[in-house]
Image 1: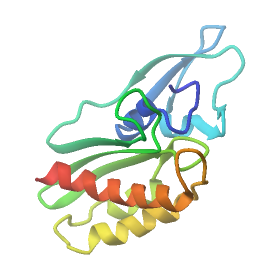
Image 2 (image 1 turned 45 degrees about the vertical axis):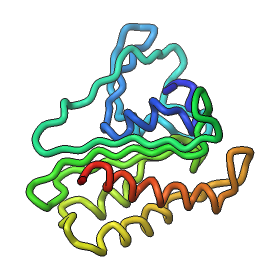
Image 3 (image 1 turned 90 degrees about the vertical axis):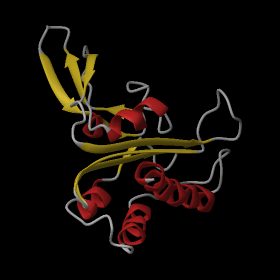
Amino acid sequence: NFVNASPIGDLSIFFLALNSVLKIRSSYGKEREIFLKDFFKGYKTLDLQEGEIVIGLSFRKPIGQYFFNFEKVSKRTYLDIASVNSAVYYRMNGDLIEEIHISGGGLAPVPKYFQKTCDFLKNKDLSDENLLKEASEILLSEVSPISDIRGSKEYKSLLLKQLFFVHFEETTV
């Protein structure tokens, strides 16, 4: 999923939300690490040099009061590519969002990590009734989906916004 760089790869979206790190080895045996969110440079373009291969993936084990949710919308129930998929990981300290990572697929040329939305939500009070509405507007401003066989750009934007709210409904109930 990662090296294919598919903008709708389920595993890419899942592990982006966990703020995962890829371990890469060159043909000379030199190793380096890079955050998965920095690995995707453009459509089918990666931060992978000639002779390098991905040899591992790691992420910190979630601790404390944390929540994780992955959602996928596709035309068929099984074995189908996503129209839009999205994941969120966040850790709370009381009502404050201490850490958050949000990702989405089918919305950009690469699997998307929503940096601006994460920055906005960090250290905010989740009990604020307007917070998620404001955040959803930032989220939508970070992508410009295209219309294709999986849906129109308007449909994909609507799906993303709905999935964003579902993440928090699923994890706070």
